[in-house]
Length: 388
Ligand SMILES: *Cc1c(COP(=O)(O)O)cnc(C)c1O
Image (cartoon, rainbow, N blue to C red; front, side, top):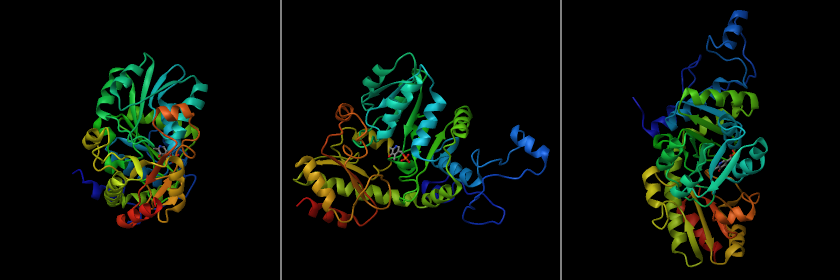
């Protein structure tokens, strides 16, 4: 029987262990003994299942991979050292020199830098497009397009792209569709269910949720996709250590209940900001004013916890707010139980060329708020006093 999300978050990936421990054991070991020489040879030849060396796979990591794969309704997961390790492992596994990637223009800063500065050196071409515009996606496809890479909702503009429609375009062109699902977590959005081939996560954010781990995850749909990812991950070496895997497994226990509170708090705060006279605009997929609200409603279950907005006073007013809020803390990252506020143009997206930033709608006055699970009315009162 397929469990509901609340149940899955508690039980996914949890298998019986030697001592019947309820919590997953942390296999804090770099290597594993072979029973004898033949056993070692059989493991290396893939004739027998078992663990060899932690860079290749570790039981605590495997438990987490199974858990997230189950939450995303995928075939298998691959735990990585960070979200960027997941993203770059996927690039390395699916594109090579001469190939072309179509990528959302509103993406996590280092993702665009990876394509623009690193992968170009390896002969990989790219186009950044507004992936909420299906015609723009179609027009960006070239004969050598091997991947369409979408972040939805996109960071930090919260532009929403239609996963099912983009999957059709990508598949018609013979390309894989990769979705960065960090902003939603599998509780809010399951891209594979809408036709995506591969999901990547920064588990640093909602999946872990407690601002104490940097980690990532890849979830694939088929064994044919899994093999090249595992091969690249094993050789590049960007794996998640067992202790971090344990912490993320622990975080996932409360993912479903946390996401409900993130959704609820962010909706209230977005509505408060939109009605406030000092605010010029608010982007939150749960607002009726959001240009892709209907698409968000179709493919998301709740609208997650990230809001971006601009104050009428522009950057100066935004700075004043960031310096005077008392509950939300001025820090990058997002998706934790604590509210965080930051300024993308001078912080997370400072590495992106100004032209590309403006094209993607990341204005100099844009403030990004990651709404935590504190009391919503207190968060609102705090934002209100910071706008006085
Ligand atoms: C944070 C983030 C990443 C990168 O993750 P790290 O764990 O910091 O490497 C990628 N995509 C999105 C949408 C993010 O928010």
